[in-house]
Image (spheres, chains in turn blue, brown):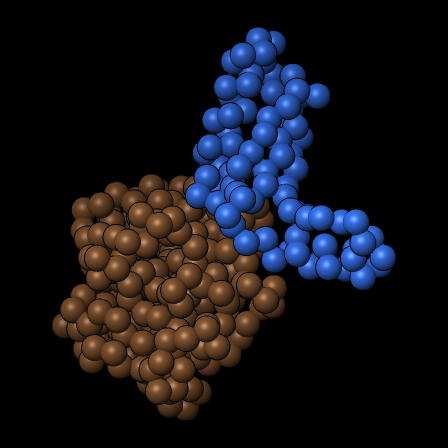
Length: 79
Length: 225
């Protein structure tokens, strides 16, 4: 099974990179731009046919290494 | 006193800290990260650098390396642990120190000498300094912006666990003297037992007047005290 994982900074955590990207787009004339938060994206394939256990497995990966739970949130989707 | 410096692929301050420790008469050994046994040490140093090229997050991969289990065991048994710069980032990734280091607020790699204030001089790492002493120490990092939750911040204040704060030349702690956006100008913290210190500034670069100053010496001599 294949999953996608999106990791984003938590709401209260300052995202200076997102801010710079946002400012640059505004400078390019994208005036209706409200807000940008920059994140990370992973595609993960696992050898597991059962969807529940595959999801649990990927969730464990997130908690063990991929995500810093102090500052980041994550979403897992099947692709 | 016996010390061990952990070396990862991408560490680049390992030899500097080795030289500083030997200058201060520590019996030092360099330990490659793939080792599974740590020689008996009174002090473990996790040095600065760019372990694993800062892939994923600074310190994240090194924080899961083979030798780290031994470092965690030794730290829990009371061994002194010093994490400098990338070493501080690694210690937060292992959970030995709470909080995390975010990208510098101004998005720039900052390499310069800054002033830091000794907030607590009653620890194994700082007893040779005076309280509120202002030190001039080099920083060189891209992710030094310390961040943590409000409970931990309270704990840091209440239990006197803040080791150093960025300040100006006369010791005033203010926003202008903060080089990276770090919460409350924090430059270094202790764990609750105060046997682990993580700090972004590089004391090992300040042990010789020939190349800098000697403001870092007392950190090492405190450990020998």
